Amino acid sequence: MLRAVLHSGPLSRTAIIRETGLSAAAVSRHAAELLAMGLVWEPPEPSRRPRPGRPRIPLDIETSHHVAVGVHIAVPRLTFSLTDLRGGVIAHERVPRQPQHGAVLHDVARRLPGFLRRHADGRSVLGLGVVTGGWVDPDAGVLVENSALGWRDIPLRRMLQRAVGLPVHVEGHARALAHAELLFGAVRGGDLVHLFVGNAVDAAIATGGILLQGRQYGAGGIAHLPVPGSTEHCPCGRTGCLQATVSDRAVAQRAVAAGVIPHPDLQLLVSAARAGDARAMDLCRARLRLIAHAVQPLLDLISPEALVLTESATIHLPQLLDELIRELENDGDQVRTGSFGTDTLAVAATAPVLAAVYQDPLGLRTVGSAR
Image (cartoon, rainbow, N blue to C red; front, side, top):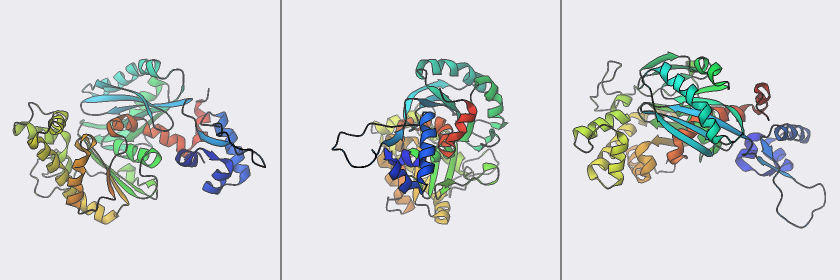
């Protein structure tokens, strides 16, 4: 019912019955619960001529009562963010990342109260999302492996739960963004593959609007897919692995070797491409061709309704997506960039909290989140 209101609201209770197939009594009961918890509200109807029968008071998502807070852990930095129940970004801040996981988590716990004081404005905080790349087990709250960070078997939830005093939801960034696409983005329901290409390279796969999990949530591990023709050495001991070939770090190092940028920072390469540097554009296009060659067999196997790419160059230069479309020999209808633009990491950080809310809103009563 809450997801129906999210996707189609404002909705009258009669429309909710049609959308969900729930009984009138169930809709009435759940509406009262969701209203009491501050998850929905009753916006006033536009002025119109009175109609016979009971007034059809609509329900819509309440975006002023609750917020979700999150932190995205990347190689260069941490991104703290605050979003409303529609995934709208209220605030975000970026800070450099400490090298060791213990220092990073201490930094998160130390900075979080001040971030909330500056931006939450007294609203109820539903939980903390902790999102990073690689293999993450959200049930256990453990980062199993992130080779870009050099971290293994880090119990993120256990290490943060007591320190922050909030429910902690841990997720990999490809799955977090797939959740966000299914809830708030251009792709709602159906089958999709979401590719995240940064310093970590991951995928998330959804069928019928449900994310494929795999053993210990290992589905979507594409970092070691072979890239035809690549001779890049991978920490796993092989050559030509996808992450070793197309990661931000690898592409930026190639740009330094070609004299395009002074030091290996992908944002410098993207800025050069945006400024019209032909060599920078060629490197960005080459990256997309390599991605296409590696993931083509995966797409042939799954045949998703949509392929969503989150990658820095196409966020800032969406016309580059045509390179991926050509290499995949796709008509372009199924291939698109992510829905959140430069807010991508901010939305990813809070997505696991919001996904939990829309999966089980009444579960919030067990964590005392209502004011």
